[in-house]
Image (cartoon, rainbow, N blue to C red; front, side, top):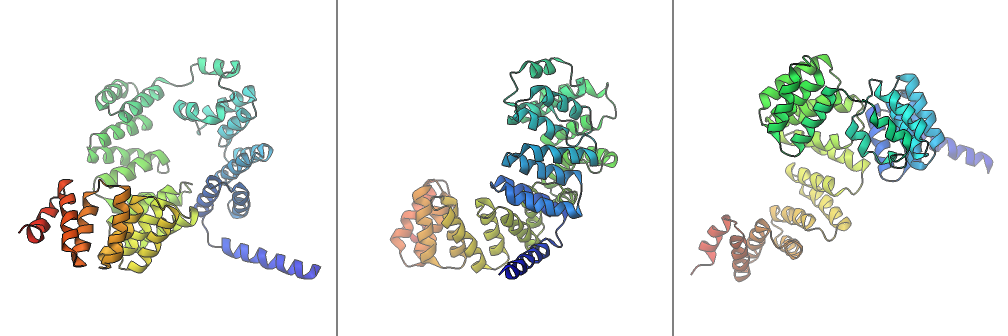
Length: 403
């Protein structure tokens, strides 16, 4: 019996190892983060422990530390943050500050936060202030005294003001702050990035791209710059460039699964449907049942000509989100394209019960009913579509409903 158990254990171990072979560091980091977000920190810890055998790097330690912290194992989290520091000095200090804040130790939290702000892993005031980890110490005297000191430079405060103004749509004030700083801080890459962000908001994409190319020549791996570059490439009509930039971010180990969906959208725009679907399916492996991803997977499958696969995704989305009008419309559209009029009509009917203000759905419902030989019903739906501003409905009304 004992021998059998040992045999089964080694078989399981071999299968696990085989399953992990061929995965990149980015694969591990994204999956680890997704598991934590899905409430499975134990699985994340096991996965990232395996990853550390091949990638004993600071970002892997940081991700596992987050999993330990989520599980409430602060001692192990502290060990991992210290390990991250030993690999890359300063990388674990912000995490240590958060852990000690969660433990209610304000003095030690402030100590590690000071070390973080003195390192290359410096965090913005906004990020720190919005971090719920510090809520237990925000009224402590050590914390209040810390924020009375002159922590951030004039240019850092100015950049924060620029970003705030842009977030509220106040481009004019953002430009005023930027202009006031440029003379005093020539060659400051972060300030130049803020200028590129202003250009982006003004839709002056060539200017933004020129600035970003310049600062990325000095800092080719800067995550913030690369993300703005990808957004600008996408907005300027260069989805191929955007997909390449997202690939750079993913290959660098950026542990943000959302990048897969962003790259998928770029691939879709360049006509690389199979690649787009591959990224969305990879995202679904991380977040099974995600509504947005299931919808995209269905649409991409339909675009590639596999309507049966599309229907599978749409039906699964409806099973998980039975009261969502968009999920019904997705499947109805798929039935509509395949001329399965009865099924399409049923799904449009359900969608319109949930979301009556949808002129496109009213029109398609009318077309489905007309194709089923139910002209009177169709005319009712065409009138509803026309009444909600669908101009295409006028043609169907004149051909079929005006005697």
